[in-house]
Length: 284
Image (cartoon, rainbow, N blue to C red; front, side):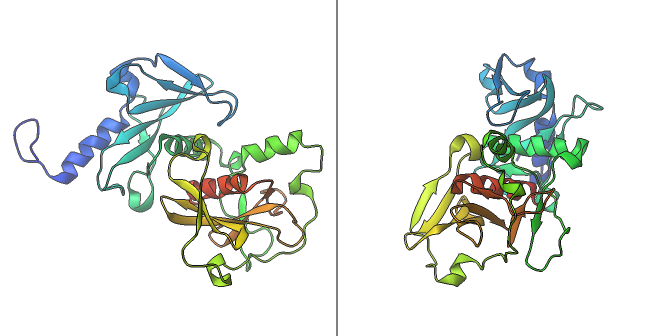
């Protein structure tokens, strides 16, 4: 690889240059976005997405809250950040103290967290910002079979669950009394074939590309949640005391309500899968 001065440059130097460019505020290069799209449906009130009609800015999207910049998602080429085959979207947090240079959201081994879909990168930005400004507003819990009540892991509360509870004429699930319940064993240890037989694409507008439910004809009450074919967790229906309801299992733990520590449960496997995805994205 040759640098702009004509001298050989290492791969590490080249990738560092790519990351420096990604962390630079896109408004310095492209000006203010000329398109603003409301994200209230997927992100909540006050959230918006800024983009540019300039083809040179096609690979970057600016996340706004109450008209203020929160960060941006920018497409990286393939590299050592974990997607050697095709690259992906990096999440960059806006820094008010250094507005010309953002902060890359990092994942495993201190490398930039790179997502296959821009929607996932925008989610990383939103929750990284929430964690940075006020962790108490973005917490939930998971409880494993051996944990005592009150033991919690960092995560988030699904906004859609809160909206559902407000509009539901019945008592919200989080305050219903629940029996003590052990996390079920992994489906593959309960007779499910090693290879799932059925695959369902999860809604792109909420999950992004490559997220699916995978399951078996003989086991309709359990679905694996997968990202690019890799299992992330699973969702399951009809556990004791929760007939007809779906629960989310991540890292061998139920996802539970942060306030009550009751197991969260949902109307559909897609809603439960969304909580699994968010727990995975936040690495709770």
